[in-house]
Length: 302
Image (cartoon, rainbow, N blue to C red; front, side, top):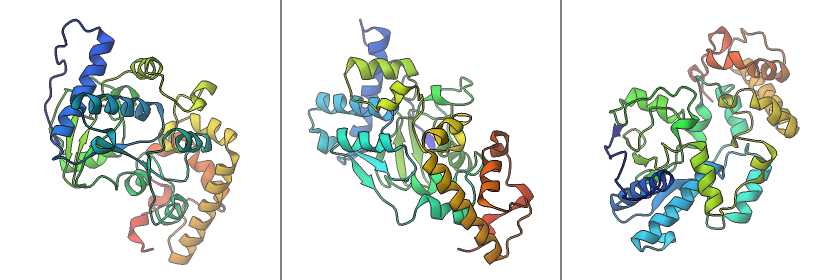
């Protein structure tokens, strides 16, 4: 993965700071389209506030370039099966052009195969969210302000193949760049709003009167996969709001334990039930550590 340099400020005379932020993002998108070889941009869309603002900016860029939006960009949603139902309903109602990308497996089957997803082992993103866009210029709504460890990294840097795996699996890592070249995944990535703050995002949404998921009005600041290891303490509130998903996780963990027995994988943590696994998995401090007992799931075939 390589970083492509682009000036942080594009020098829009007379523009307010807010307008400058918007225009910078628009120019990044126009540059991405110009380098896409006539192919529509691949827009990674989740239905959350960041991708909502991103799509609005993409539409503005298309208008400035005089290209119909359907020829300029296509937004794709990776169906994981673990997003909040209200978020899915919102996209079905307000995003008629959205492409729903389905895969041949399910998140629950992948738990049986790969074990519990953790912050150290986020196989879920690798297998359900990052397969699309090969051969395309891809746009994402990742932002530095969402990073767990913002440290004022340099604006652009070269990223090695080993580091690329780490960064792509941490959607909002502070090492994300405006433009990236992902060699292992055969795609180029543009992060037009990577330098936006949450206030920038909401101001843009309200100023442009863009429809957004009303779960935000109920106090949710993050919308995404229910139970995501990166969500921290929010997971407790998610499972209280959507208890069916808690039961689905426990059932998947039960099947995972059955597979341990079938494949002869030592159950050194001593988990007796899917509920035991769930309780361990909900311990926030456990998600930054290797699985207990040095269980190496990849050493065993399906």
